[in-house]
Structure formats: structure tokens, C-alpha cells
Amino acid sequence: VTNFLSSPTLSSSFGRRVLPSSRRVHITKTRRRRRKVSLNNNETLLEGGCCEKEKAVLGVGSCGLDILARLEKFPQPDEKTRSETLVMEVGGNCANALTAVSRLSEASSSSILFTKIGDDATGKDIISILEREGDTFDTSKVVHGGTSPSTYIICVKDKANDDPTRTCIHTPSNEPLMNSEVTDADIDSLFASSPREIGLAYFDGRLTDVALRIAIKARSLGIKILVEAERLRGDDLDALLKLADFCVCSKSYPQEKHPNDTNSFGTALTEMANSTLSDRCKLLIATLGSRGSVALLFDDASVDTDTGATVLVRSVDEIIEEMERAFQSRKQSEESGTPYSSSSSSSSSSS
Image (cartoon, rainbow, N blue to C red; front, side, top):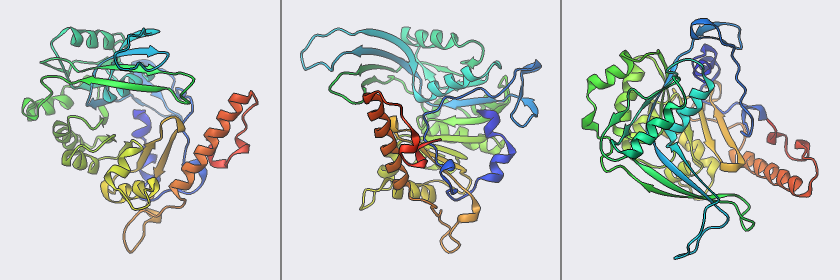
């Protein structure tokens, strides 16, 4: 992931427009393949054939303990029920993303987590679970204190629901990380004393006051920045998004940030590209749940010369409608037992 984002071809091929052709708007339901060969001294062989030291991803944001209970049906008030399974895992967007990076890497300290975890039994469970990832996951920068956040998650897949549901009951820390707890020297140390050179700083939209200061430092060092926008979180997140080279948002965020009369997701996403993000942003991905995701790639060639705004080659709403038709066609094929063919739906539904 880091090697791809640090590729010099990326900055030259992206910019401020949505590139044409359905190949540029992806439906993400694909399996990732590791595209590297391990060499000595933690080097990697990239697709282009060049070798370079693998860089680390610094993640700043949420981390807690998830307790997942799977049920046959959602309980009624005052009902006693039994779970089919009960599993404890580390959760939080930042911790989840870094776990994925860690598992894609064989280099030590490829994922570096900066967050706050409590000095309690839950905190010990969190560290213990993360340590199972091996030396690729670095927790040495974690701040300790207070109680650890946790989330009880009820997962249900029954005949009455087309899609599985999850209900999250979150218990926050009683001492969340405060801006005053992190000095400028602490932030300098995040980068200066890192066991591996940092190639990407990832922010999941939490701890925004601290995250903004760390992002400004990362920008001064020429480190690329990925920001996640899941929900509205105030001025600090807005400022953080202005620093982003890459952005991933939820389906709800664009319309919460930029509501419009027609309730158009595409209009809101385009407005987000034009006003919430800066010209430095090269890629905007909106996740669409079980339907996949849509990605906008920007290029200077299609900027409106009068307004400076992004020019859409295709309607985002139209693309999402095609994705929905492809999803329903695949679902009907699965229910009927007939093979699914992407040719039966729009060409945009295949990737």
C-alpha cells in the first residue's frame, strides 16, 4: 500500500478531474493480491521491477476492544437470548486499517499506531491481540491512561433481512486523548524516532485536534496524507481534509456536509471534491457498503477554466445506479442458482 502511494507516477497521473472510462470508476469487491517478492534487508520488488526499502504507515485515531456476538435474530426488549458465537477482537478504524497493512507486509514496524489505550484489563487485552500480529505492528507509540474504549456489537443474519445487520453499543474512554497531553516534542519524536521511515500518515477522523498537528508535521516532512471522513467532526476535520493527498469517505458524509435540494449523492460528492478537499488531493473514494465503492481520480486537464471546479465526465448517480443493478442481478443469480454474468448488467459493473 505504501509503495503504491509513494510511486512517482501517481502524482503525475492524477489531478483535478474525474477521468473517463468505466475502468476509472471501480466497484470494489475484488481480492487483493500481494504484488511483491521479499528480498534481503526488507526490500521489496515492485511491479515496475525497481527495489526500494519498504516504508511504514503511521496511523492516528481510534482503537478499542470489540466484543462481537452473533445472534439468529435481534432480541426484543426484556428478552433473554443466546449468542451463537462470542468473539473479542481489536476494533476502531485506525487499528483495523493498520492491521490490514501489517498483514500485507513482512517488514518489522510497517504499521505504527498512535492512540490512547487505558491502563486496565481491556487495555491489556487490546495490546495482547495486537501483539499477535508480530513485529510488523508497532504499538510503542501508544499513550496509556484512563479506561479503554470498548464496543459490544450484535451481529444478526436472519431470513427477514436481505443484508446482515450490526448494532454497536459503544463505551468511550473516561480519559480520551487530550491535545494538551501531546507536546510538540512528542510529535517530532513520532517521526524522528520511528524504527522505519514513514511513507504515509493515515488519520481516521478521530482525535482531530491532535491529528491536525501531526498532519501539519507530516506535510512539512513531505509525507503523503490519507484522511478518512466518516461523519462530521468540526473544524479540525475540515482543516485535516485540506491537507489530504487521498481521502476516503462514507456514503453519508458528502450529503451531511453538502446537502442539496435533489438529495443527490453525486452532486454532494462533487461539491466535496471542489470545496472540502484541496487541489493537492489526487483520489477520493466513497464507500457504499455491500454495494462496493466509487472512486474519483483527478487530473488538471478537465478543470473548468472559469470556475476552477472539477468537471465530471459521467454522472456519479448514474454510475451508482448501474452498480445497484449489477448488485441486484448478482443476487438474483445466486438465489436462482444460475451463473452470474457481468455482461447482463452495465459494463461499469465489472472491474
